[in-house]
Length: 224
Image 1 (tube, rainbow, N blue to C red):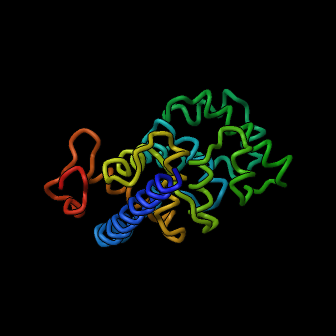
Image 2 (cartoon, helix red, strand yellow; image 1 turned 45 degrees about the horizontal axis):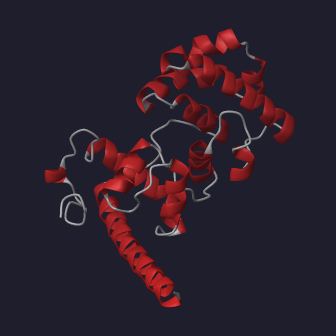
């Protein structure tokens, strides 16, 4: 029985090493392909990124950036959002879709930031996910991009590509995040997400990936 367990553990370790090796090669190649990969949302401070990320749910970053161009001029602090009316904020973010729920979450989130964090966006994942409308994905976006605290952002692109590239077989975003943490160096977590998102948008498209021009086609399990 012990020998069987040891054998399984050995196979598991061997598979993890293979994934780590592939992941490092993927990161190296994608860095050359997208040397300027970064968060596509426009922001100047933690609060702006928090709001923009909430608005980005089921909406393109391009659309969000058009909306926040005027939104961030009108609402400059957590107090501004908290004191706004539901109807007013809904009107201001209407074109991002799901505007009722987004407005509700933004107002509630900002009220909590005022009451529990002295008007400042918290700097820990534990505190961020306690805010209304903030999950691990949004928290990791904020931590990685404004506080320089590494985090893997698992959006639709990262989930799709990490499966295509054989780095995980899981589908749940949180489980994928933990799975990738085991094989991606921590210092690369934030940039890894940016690289996969850019690659997913420009090359490894959901319906028809451009495998013929893909810079990692030689190490992608879906091709070789």
